[in-house]
Every structure is written in C-alpha cells, then in structure tokens.
Length: 232
Length: 260
Image (cartoon, rainbow over all chains, first blue to last red; front, side, top):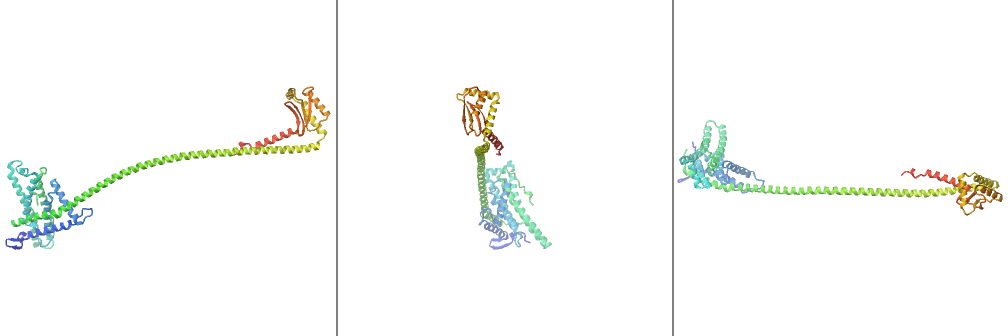
C-alpha cells in the first residue's frame, strides 16, 4: 500500500523525477492561481460585485482579521505568507474528495517544506521588525542559560508543525484505505467527509500557528503562545 | 515515513512561487478593491454628511423664513383687520349720518308739508268758515245781528275783569293816538253814541274815539287803545278753530312716535 505520494513517480529523466507530490502541488497552485486570476481580472470596486469576488473578498478579509486578532498588528505584510499557507493547505486537502487525487500535504516532504518556510519566516519577520540584535536578544532571555532551550524549542516546534499536518492528512488517507477494505460503500464516505473537516481544521491550525510564531518574534507585547502540544 | 529532500526543496520553491502568484493575482487586487470601496463609501458618507448638514442649514433657513412669513402674515392680517374695522366704522358712521340727514331732510320736508297742509287747512277752514259765516251772515245780515254783536261787545266791555280794564285804561292813557273802534259794518250814530258812552264809562271819561270800517275782521267789532285791544270778532273763533285743528294734527305727527 502506497502511503506517501512521494513514492508515486509520474515521469523520470535520469536523476530528475516528477512524483505525485510535486505534480499535485502544481495542480493546486494552478487552480488557486487560475481562480484568482479569473476573478480578479474583472474585479470591481463598486458596491455590486460577482459571487466569486465576494467569496475571495470574504476569504481575504477573514484571513486578515484572523492575522490581526492573533498578532495585534497590521496584517498587510503577513497576509501573503500566512494566507498562502492556509489557502494552499486548505485547497490541497479539499481536493482529497477527487478520486485518484492524493493530497500533497499527506507527504512529509511537503509538510517539512512548509515547516521550514515557517521556521525561516519567523526570524526574517522578527529581524525585519526589530532589527537583528534585538531579535537575537530574545534567545538569551531571561538569561543566557536559556539560549539552548530557546533554540531547541524553535526547532522542535517546527518539527511538530510539520509532523502534525502530515500525520493528520496521512492518517485520513490511511483510515479511508483501511476502511475501504473492511467496510466498503458507506462508511468510507463518512470518513472522507470527516477527512475534509480535518483538512480544513489543519489548514487553519497550521496558518494560525505560523502566525503565532511570527507574532511572538515580532511583538514584545504579544504573549508567547503556540505550545506545540495542543494539536490534534 | 520518509523525507525526500529533493521534493522538500521543490516544495519550498513551489510554495514561494505560490506566495508570489497569490500576492500578485489575489491579495493585491482584492485588497486594492476593498480599500477603494472603503474609500468610496467613506467619501460617499462624507458627502452625505455634508449634504445633510447643508440640508439642515437650509431647513433652518426655511424655518426662519416660515416664521418670518407667519409674522408678516399675522401683521398684515391684523393691519387689514384694523383697516377693515376702521372702514366699517367709517361706513357705518357715514350711513348713520346719511340716514340722519335723510331723516332730518324728511322731517324738514314733512314739517314743511305739514305747515303747508296746516296753512292750507287753516286757510281752507278759514275760507270755508268765512264763506259759511259770510253766507250765514249774508243771510242773517240785518240790524238785529249787528245789534247783537254790538250788544255782545258792550257787554264784554262792561264785564271786563279788573286787570284787563286797568290794562286797557293804562294803554289808552299812554297812547297819543285816539282809541280806535273798527267794525265790519257801518255803525249808525245811535250805536256810536252807545259805544262811546260805554267806553267812556269803562276806560276814561272824555276820551277821544275814532270809528273805522274794515273787512279784515271778517265779522265783528274791535277796540284798539294803544297796544291794548278788545274785540268780539268771528276771526278770533276761526283762529281758535285753526289752532285746535293744528294742535290735533301736531299730536298725530309727533316725531317721537316715528319708527327709526
């Protein structure tokens, strides 16, 4: 039984191979970009707007509100990163209902890539916000003794972020696969629906946690949240 | 559970590309549109507020104007009312004056007509009585009637009360002219002697007496001594009759009995 889409190779040319993870990621990227382009090329700033524009505005405004709520800062500079995290993971999980499709988020490679992005984004945003010295000073607070623990914490939460998303999506796939062999027809459908819900929740949690980490690095006023043990 | 680091690298690149794509095609256009809409709504709200303020100012102006108009209207009404009242009073006064003038004129006219009627009546009565008297006297005119008149006159002269007698005596003494006896008929000498005797006996002895004839007396005889006079004359009766008739007419046409 194939669990990771990394192992499904569509095309190979020497050392370069195109596996399902990358292929479906491109599909998700293409869909998101296409929908955005189709809707926003005829965007209206008037009071009458199309349904699709309305949907996108609700999404963007919702993400902005969430970012503002978590960071207590202007959401403008965080929106592309955090919003894309949410939209990519949500879309990748949403397409799980399509037969033959395998969510790229079910691959540990993808979730690791996303976690590495968050891992990199936290200091980038922090340094951009406070300057390098001020940012690095956080690692030796309250004492120099805490430096290794802070670094370990930083790394561990990144790993937790990656594994949480991977585990949830992969488990959904695995459960469906197992149930299909045990009780076909009806029950796997229910699990698929549950998988949709779980996928959405994971997208939300991933984006919010990323925001929380970034916010904790950028604002001294924001309490450090994001204990990595509260995931599903 | 394995990590393919090539895939990881590819996914990182993919993700960064997706971030750029979505920023380019989703976030920027949508946020721009929302900001523009917000600005539009804000400007529309500002405009609406400005319009509302303007309208409020206008409304206040109109309210002031309405109050002004009402006051002006009230003033004009009051003025007109006063003028109308004044004109009414004036017209009433004029009407009253006209009515009074008409009434006075009418009363004067009536008085004149009454006087004329009275005068006519008087003269008619007098003429009638005179003509009756004349006819009667013409029928009766004889010595006997004249004798009766003379007798009546002498009798009246003799039976004068003390006051009238004193008055006559006084006037006859004061007058430089002689005592005049005027009669409508001719007096014979015997009658004149009787009369002279009676006058001498009653007024003053030896007084000078002149005798005249006159148709004015209608029928009778009269004694004139200066300003004093004594007579028996049918004209007196007619005059009294006229007076009575006049009084009777006056009572019928008193102004107080008229309706206004």
